[in-house]
Length: 216
Image (cartoon, rainbow, N blue to C red; front, side):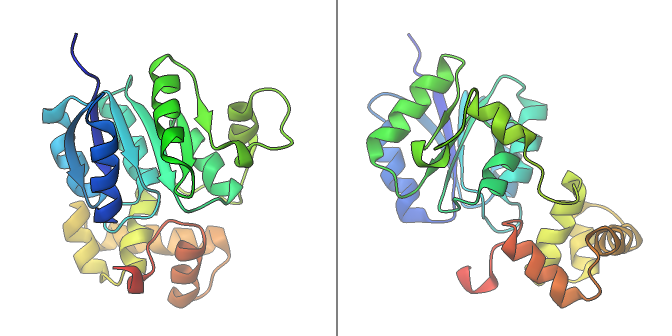
């Protein structure tokens, strides 16, 4: 019987290697990546059953990568492994198509439990995140709303701008025109009631859309 195929995307390389070593006796880890963009470029050729993603990664964050992965592989199971315990972020992860969300402070065995659960068609979240919830915690998370809803493309533009790329550089990376980048930028600023680029960067980091530049 073939082992389930796993890909891992996390810019903390030591953690990625530790997860790979933990899982390889039971699963086939077919790819490890430092950001969502490089993962998506190779994912189709790797045919993964499961993707383990960090939320905050350079170039493309895990939430955007999750949405793109689900379009290419509708049946893939996605589990986030993150330091971010903000319930808005967790709810966004499940709305994006995730089946699990684990805190990096959890015991290693929790990841194995989560993988087995999602492979059976279930859902998993670190128990401390779901305390006080009644009924399906997934439905609880999906019902949460966290301010204006940005599109996937807007989040991609926002992340790259927040990471210091110019509008021309963002346009090249996303294969769109600089005018389109500007349109997305000012549409977001209007929707978020933000009046400066600095505020936009602050919003991106605070909401987990972008990685603080010092973390690179």
